Image (cartoon, rainbow, N blue to C red; front, side, top):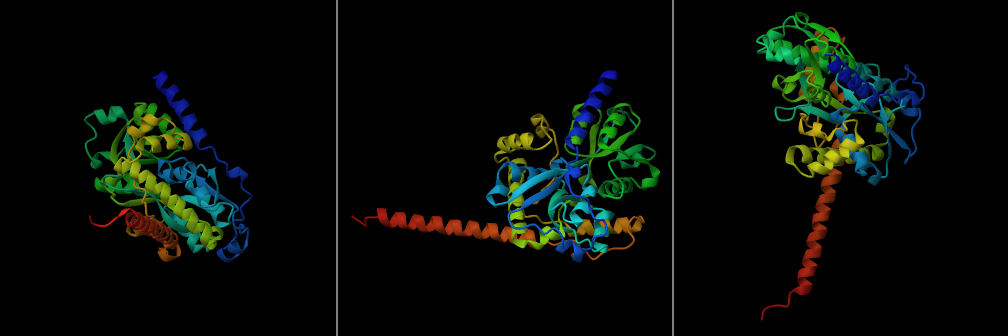
Amino acid sequence: MVKVLLTTVLLASWLLHSCVSDEADLAPVDQGANCAKAVTVSTKPSGGRIRVGVTGALSEAAQYLADAQGYFTREGLNVQLVNFVSPARMIPALATGQLDVGSGNVGPGLFNASENNLCVKIVGSLSRQEANANGVFLVVRRDLADSDKLHDYADLKGLNIAIPGRDNSSEYALAKLMEAGGHGLSDARVLQMSVPTILVSLANKSIDAALLSEAVASTAASKNLGVKWKPVSDVLPGAQFGVVLFSPQFAAQQDQAIRFMAAYLQGARDYDGAFFHNLRRGEIVDQLSKASPVRDARLYDEMGFPLIDPNGNVNLASIADQMAWFVHAGELQQAVDLSRVIDPSYAHSAVERRDGHVRRLGRDRGLRGNRQRRRTWRGPG
């Protein structure tokens, strides 16, 4: 047991180090800035450094790949990845332009940013949970999973269950898992903990289960701390938890914003090709194990992979359902107009730009082939 706890503490320290924040490098944030004011403040000149917030999650693989594969550079963009402890910490920095692009988690904070005229926009999909593409699991202690006490969602009643944060998609997802067993959140003891604390608590059996995303879920399983008991997509197929966010300042620079999205979507296509179509998988795993905090290449054979939409499309119905749940739970005062929060135009423009390039490339190759055939054809006889 002592050995397990020591291993877990070391693992927790590694995870914490992987998510050590570079937020301190950002200039102080003016919490009172509104949308109109924000767009006129700190607008970056063309070619300036673009700061992109990341937390080290697998769902951010497209960001890491676009950077590692040189797609941002190819678009003429100078991108700096900035580590954050959590997506929620990015909202104030995005609102005032101290951060240009962020990894968002659907929750009241994001909707309130719209209501408070902070103009942080959802512009694309970061990750979505599907039946064949899931990256969030309810992890339960191995001894509990091996016992005769846990068969289905109804058996979650009375358990101590940890989530990485309240007022976000983690709480919503756990509520839906409880509902699948005929229970509410109040029928379990729900605890908010940091990821390293969750891992230690699984090891010392002070909690029974935890909602964890990849690569943490597979890391816990590989250390025999728990088993990935149920994927969230079992109850919530199509759940849109992760989104790409633009600051109002960056969104106002349409050309740069579209070029950023084009590079990001190229990273998403590499990820999709590798993990769902086995295209260049070894190469992509090698890139991610060097560029992202998920360094252990063996984990890529064990992890569940969420869908990162290669066209940047978001599931509007899922986001609307989460918003309705937060209103019902009293964590959001009222529903907001999602057209004020979501702007798909950047992803659409990036896809049109890509498809136009592919069509032109095809025509050019066809013309070259025709010219070659004319040069080599000598006629009959």
